[in-house]
Image (cartoon, rainbow, N blue to C red):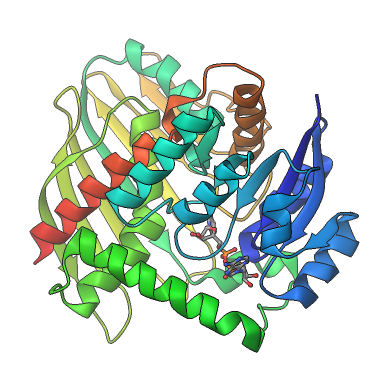
Length: 357
Ligand SMILES: NC(=O)c1ccc[n+]([C@@H]2O[C@H](COP(=O)([O-])OP(=O)(O)OC[C@H]3O[C@@H](n4cnc5c(N)ncnc54)[C@H](O)[C@@H]3O)[C@@H](O)[C@H]2O)c1
């Protein structure tokens, strides 16, 4: 069976990953694309031999089986529209900014029986399986540390040589304004209307935009969602995000330490997971987000010395797409990218804000 895709939102991640991946993957067909910017839509439709549609036309299209939602902001509302129109949905993170939005989408997915998957691609990374195979030989897990160094996007997408998005056409402005207002209401529901603008920004951009990936990865690795008990926010400078240092407890009792730093001038994004056990350690240098076929590197140190088990040649995004197709065909969905995970994420991220007040 060929899965016919419609991609909604044709910005950086669609151009870096989703469009080329769907276009090259056997069993997948890029049937249509849609964006609020008709010029961008026409350009990418022509480049990929897909139909250029408006978002409304995309949801109604009879030749689209699944919608990939890669609009900015949050994605539960678009997911609901697509599910109600009879489409399976793969929605980028953050799936939503409030539990109410997640709950509404889960309800519709259950009623329609369609597959709804969140773009937590890291849970599909082969390194997760490699770590799972290594840990049982290494005793008890004592400590899990995740360090993220996050630069601005521009150098990360330099290899794509794409122009930054043009301003949206005037006709789209009211729609975007309405969406922004809905986003503020979702933020009120999650962190409270009286939370400072800086903490709201932190929740919206750093926690829901980036740290959410780390939470999904912890779930994928079998550590559950951390119960955070301490947070420091360091070095706020003007509007720049602060360094986030947070600690918590994981399922099984191990300690978790997150350090996330905004490093705007750094050329590369880096993310390292270090799992310390009673008999050694496992370190994962996680693949960067904008490289379609980049793979993570795993280093295992144990009683037999240090080695680097191969973590496959297929990247996390490819395996995410394969997992989606398998679930649509009736296989059990991957639990790590179910929308229920977004509920756990929101609760943990709300706790970080609470501890940071
Ligand atoms: N999985 C990852 O590693 C990863 C990496 C980057 C971005 N993302 C996520 O993907 C999403 C998109 O990010 P991006 O950087 O590509 O954004 P972007 O701003 O580059 O592009 C968004 C596109 O969506 C279009 N758009 C805006 N509102 C729309 C609407 N209502 N209907 C249709 N099109 C609309 C815009 O015109 C633009 O072309 C974000 O939620 C982001 O968090 C995920």
